[in-house]
Image (cartoon, rainbow, N blue to C red; front, side):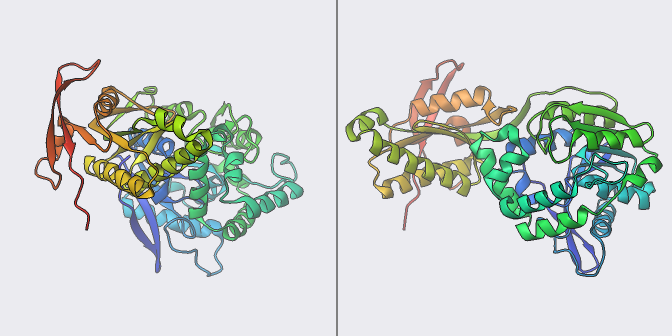
Length: 451
């Protein structure tokens, strides 16, 4: 997803960051409560996907409240955390011209949104509350909340594990066996705020009780619960729905504290139906992007020559270099298996630069391996599991198959897009690409001269 511009509005002298996706016809403000990071969130394909989908049926507004992400720190003026959050939201509504949006929130956003609606009922036209709560702590007549012991254990867990892959696995168990998601989610948490700051804010949010607000809500409300959730339980979500007049309650399977992965399509479909009155269903998403395929040349012979242990070390170093250069040039690693990799880039120039950088760095490491690279640009289908498909992917793979060691070989489409640029192309003949109609002119791209 193309990163939308991060803008800032002010609360006093403090800056509050926000982003706007899509154009309407209705406005939705989405909040994950006290913790977010606008600039990092769209790096993860599943997060990018749900933002694209929501922005297809409404104008989506997101913000980092003060004390989180790229916004200024929370002020030390004695104000409560829900008061500061409401001030930030009001400033964002004014900056974006959103008069009465649907307010949507997950996890600890529930009590913050409800408190806001109590104070500013005219600034809300609907509520979507997913896997959240009106109050975290138990109280008389409210066994759904956390016991004092459980609340203390939660704070201790956050203090010890926040920003780690172990905590990420507890939060999104459906992705616990997905190393890429675990690494990203741990980094995402570390960027939001420090463990100490998270504990301080969570301690304060545990004292917010928005249950008295529930019977006063007079806007259409959709509440979604998670059947196996451990922190924001289905019982807490159900309590909200039972106490807001006319609220609709839907319980989804799974135990993730987030809706980006497990059950994402059902979640998005319910949101769309609530906003627009209809559900279009999950449609394959397509984007224009550059695919870069790389693999090692003659790897089987080299592996047999140096032995399994040494070959494993070569592969590990190769993979490290590939991941590093793809990240450096703004790409995303889609798949890596054995001695090859598939990545995608927003621009063909970045993909070409990445390929040349891979050749140069692997040569300097003297690993006795050569790689080849093949590129094509076209429309890709983004799949739910983060992989990509479509004819453009097949063409890129066929281009790679015709490349030699040390090559950066591209299709004519890439060459045509970059005509007049700084890149120099050399004709490499016209070829038939298996399974692809017509014949294709291919070009090698000269490596830049090094100082």
